[in-house]
Amino acid sequence: MNITYLGTNTLLITQGDTTLLVDPHFSRPTMLSLLGKIRPDPARIASGLTRSGINRLDGILLTHTHYDHALDATEVLRQAGGTLYGSESAIHLVQGAGLGVKTGVQVVPRQIYQIGSLQVCFHPARHVNFPAPMGWLMPAEGRITRPLRPPTWLWNYQCGAVYAIQVDRTLIFGSAGFEPGAYRGLAVESVVLGVGGLDLQPQSYLQALYSQAVLDPGARQVFLSHWDNFFDPLEKNSQPMRLAKRSISQITALGARYGHTVQVLELAHTIPSA
Ligand SMILES: [Zn+2]
Image (cartoon, rainbow, N blue to C red; front, side):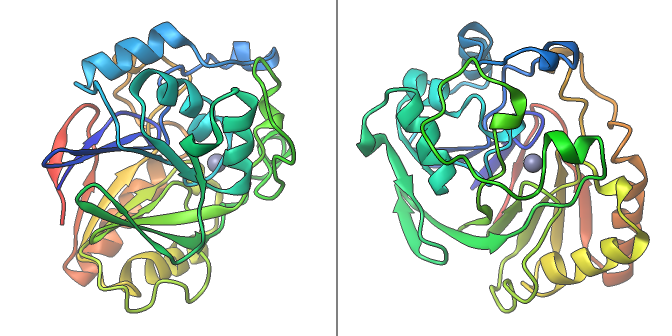
């Protein structure tokens, strides 16, 4: 199984003929444009898919429905096909886009879904808490309660239920939050950890996160995602965003203590994963 990092928490997962996309975010509206209503950008999505070599998808998997994880999901579905797997909030995005009910699956936590050659399981998780003012715009709780049709305000992309998504022996956290005790004994090989906003948390939180999300499921490899400045177009990015720099070095130090490999996922690079 290979993982290609496409910025934010967008992960292209391939194994043989099976192609999955986690949290697609190609539109990347600028910070200024977030003051107005937002919508997926079909041209940017088309070029993002082409550049990544994606012409068809088997599944789109959503960790939660904040705009930087879910804004593009339905347009990607329209362009590349497949089935969208996510929370009830995610299904309201499918309905709002006027796509057929069969294109969305509201997941049952801990149930195993066979998608092509890959086994996918959605474990309960939580979203990291952002302090104000970010926390007002993107609260860690809240759901999309009716079909959502863009263009619409950023805050209408409510978080919904949050999942840590297991794809075979890799466990993916789109946000640096965890459900205590939920990953014990999963026997995964690798963890992908979204570090966005983690610098705003106290050091003790990072320790707890590492223990729950990496040590509990028995992972030995940690890949860091959601570190880039996703207000810029993908081509411009290379610097870790302001809110993730300190945590990247702290997680790297924690990993070294346990003999784990910690790797910051590089944009457009493909790595083998278990
Ligand atoms: Zn989020």
